[in-house]
Structure formats: C-alpha cells, structure tokens
Length: 270
Ligand SMILES: Nc1ncnc2c1ncn2[C@@H]1O[C@H](COP(=O)(O)OP(=O)(O)OP(=O)(O)O)[C@@H](O)[C@H]1O
Ligand SMILES: [Mg+2]
Image (cartoon, rainbow, N blue to C red; front, side, top):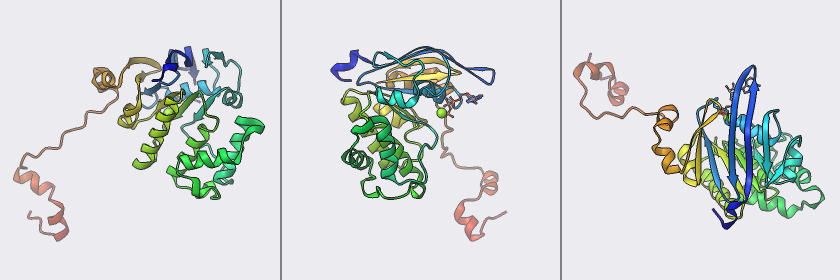
C-alpha cells in the first residue's frame, strides 16, 4: 500500500440487492483504500458479481457507493468510468466485429472523451501482450487473449478504482502473472483494486486484504494469511481435497482398477 492509502478509492455502504425475490446482497460494507488490493472471494452464487455490478452502476440497489469520495448515485457506467472506474465484468464484454485497436479506441473515446490518443491504445495493448495484434478482429482472439483485451480496456483511463471480476479465468499462467504485475503496478501508482477470482492463490498472492462473501454477507475480512487460516474459509470455500494415497492396494482393488500400462497391453489378470 502506498502513502496515499488513507484516501478511499471505494466506499460501499449497506449495499442490498434483491433479485428474483431473493436477498442476494444483505447490507454489505466494502472499502478499498487508494493503493490497496482487496480480494472479494467466495463460493459461486455468494454475490460477488452482483456487488461488482452495483459498483459499476449496472444494478438497482439500496445503500451508497462513493468512488474517490464522490457519490455515484444515478450515474451510469460510462460516467463512472470518466470519474475513475475501470471495470472488467465476468462475462465477455467486447465488440466482436471490431479489431483489438478498434475496441480499445471505442472505449477510450467514451472514457477519455476527445483526449484519447493512438499512443494510449498502443501502450495499453502492449502492456497486456497484444501490441502486435492490434489489427486482429476480436472474434479471432483466443479466450485468454480476449480476457487480456478486456483488462487493457479497464486500464484505459489510469483509473482510481479497478474492479476485476475473475481476471485470471481462461488466462494462461504467464498471462496471469502479467495481469498480476499490472494490478500491482496500478496499486503502486495509487489505484485501489478490487478483484474476485476462484484462482485463490493467484488472487491472495497480490492482495493486501481478502474478504469472504457468503450468502450475500461479508463473513471474514483479513490479511491473506488470516484468510487462508480461517476455518470458515476452509469449510465453506476452500475445498479439502482428498489426499492421494500411496498405500499398496489390495489384490482385489488392483484388479478392479488395473494400472494404465496393463490396461493398454491387455494384460490385466482377472
Ligand atoms: N437476474 C437475476 N435474477 C435472479 N437471481 C439472480 C439474477 N442474477 C443473479 N442472480 C442470483 O444471484 C446470486 C449471486 O450471483 P452472482 O453472479 O453475484 O454470484 P458470484 O458470487 O459472482 O458467483 P460466481 O463465483 O459463480 O461468479 C446467484 O444465486 C444468482 O443465481
Ligand atoms: Mg461472479
């Protein structure tokens, strides 16, 4: 965290959302300081994307959202972008018929108005490893490349708050490391970062703080170490994988599950 950490990039207070007659967010408070990286983690359906959509101005809700101290009530996403929000939604959010450069230009002209420049486009595309692919139609990108483009778009305006909903999904390990480095660099530059991802270790590796969201409420908040060690996190979110046994198998079991070599050779004695 930088010395600007006292400033709040995000202050969300008492956020409540009901969808389909069900309380999906039950009055949650989330803050992200400038320069801080916060992980909003939790099981599928716990409400992470719903909260991100609230921050983006995409969902009606109760409670208040402040970005950099300014109230966001009633502002749509493009105006929040101009006030410093970079948002990478969970689902695909590209213009499929356009090229990488055209996608970035389209968003830059919305987020930056007349002040966008081709240099900005090239800089952001290069930062995510797409500098050589500016003229490629987005429909021809791989899933991981498309994700990197969406990430570059979220960084277009040097945002004061970056909200990334599963940035590592479908991205290869090198790409994930590059995205992590970019998020850390953005935080060092003073941006607040809020991310959700089921690649828990990748997320915790860069987080200053992690929150466990359970059934629309924040159940745990603490350092990555505290989060990893929490029993509720272990029981409700981090799966306890069965250990691989090296105990010799009984003859019966060996016959029931023959080793692959003997299966291929058809040598399983029965
Ligand atoms: N339009 C809707 N109508 C009714 N229920 C909805 C609607 N949109 C989302 N939900 C429900 O809200 C809950 C929270 O969904 P959300 O997408 O926020 O979960 P999530 O924590 O992001 O999950 P994941 O980790 O799978 O992305 C889910 O149970 C979902 O079914
Ligand atoms: Mg989600």
